[in-house]
Image 1 (cartoon, rainbow, N blue to C red):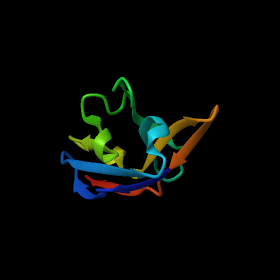
Image 2: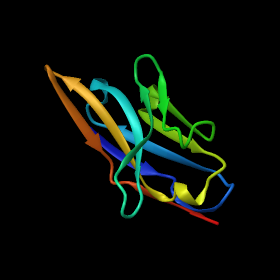
Image 3: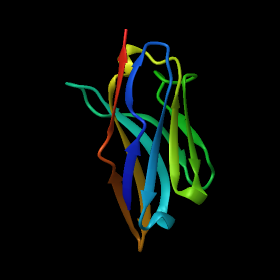
Length: 119
């Protein structure tokens, strides 16, 4: 599975961005996808994830009510709509996928897309 993020950029506080993640390869094996972020000097943290089968979602407390994760399974795409952005949302955002195949579990990462929120 290959993951490619896009949609990052520079935005003022209060603005919005929409991140996209394009998945290719053995996408049939993906059972969950998510967005993580890592700010300079900090650990990578989960932003939101979504179950491929049920569509159930999970959000970090810091983004609840502001960010929305979604998927278009037919297009092998995942999105993160980010509204009311804050300077503390500044980070590299990574697309993540978990799959299961042949009795083994696998985890995949994209290269990331930078989000910078100015105050």
